[in-house]
Image 1 (cartoon, rainbow, N blue to C red):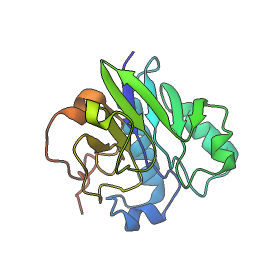
Image 2: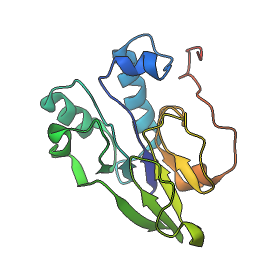
Image 3: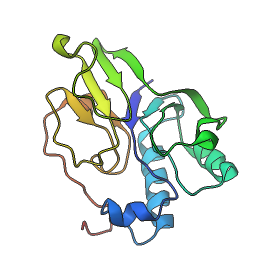
Image 4: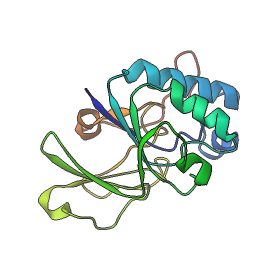
Length: 177
């Protein structure tokens, strides 16, 4: 089992394309690319921590169908755009507003929002967050796991902690903005 992290998919949210400069021709294309990227990355036996803002402007039945099509056991750490219908979806393995996890000896503090300070930060704990769509300059050991930073797909802890230049890239066959 591999553990993945993501946030700010904003499935169904047409405004995300313009506001966050997502390189898709339509909301349907954005949703289809993110679903395909998720399922190409995450296996059925894997686990995904989604750090908020799963979907907007979707009916509960459509959200439930989408969540059911996404591979892995899915945990939601709720974001500001996750309303009662999203929180109540039957496909979540757990729902909370904050979570702590130790993975491969690394302490993780997870919330939709970036923190100025967090539990264990002086003992090398990492703060994983979303919400900022790659626009917030991180503090040391603070990582934005949002799809806008990570090529519109979930990522592993190893990927998150390997130094690299983070930038938006377009899905295969499309030109970046």
